[in-house]
Length: 220
Image (cartoon, rainbow, N blue to C red):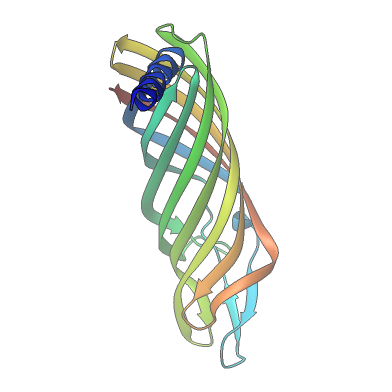
C-alpha cells in the first residue's frame, strides 16, 4: 500500500511538472475571409460515360473571388498550436467551358482542415505564426453535368496541403485578433454525378486557393 501511494504521488508530481513545463490553453475563433483561386477548375471540361454508356460532359464553376466564413477550435501548447478549421460558402458562379457567361449555377464549397502552427515570440502579446495544414474539400455545383438533354449537379471531392502565416495580437489575456493568409494546393481526385455515380479521375483537377481574412479568437 505504501509503495502504491509513493507511485501515485510521483505520478501526480510528473503531471503537475508537465503542465508547468508545457502550459496549454484552449480556444475558439470565428471570422471572415476572401478566396481567390486559379487552376484546372477554371479551364478544363471533363468527359465521362454514365451507367448506360452514354457520354457525359462535366463543367466546373469558374471560381475566381468569393468570401467564406472561417471557424476554428484548437489548443495552444507553449509556442505550438494544433487546431481544426472549417470553412463553408455558397454562391452563384459562372460555369466554365461555355462561349459566354450566361450559364450559371449555385455552388456549395466546404473545407475541413487540421492545422499545425509554430508561434514566434510566444508568450508575448504579439506573435507571428507559421505552419501548415492538411484538408478535405468538396465542391457541389448546379447545372454542370450534361448527359443528352439531362442537366444535373456535380460534386468534386479532394484533398489539399496548405501553408499558413498569421499574426496573433492579444488585446486581452483571453481575446486576440488574428489576421492570416493561407495558401491551399488542392487536388480533386473524384467526381460524383447522378448519372455516372462516383468516378475516379485519371488526371486530377489541381486548383490553387489563396485565402486571406481575420478572426476573433477567444481563449480559455
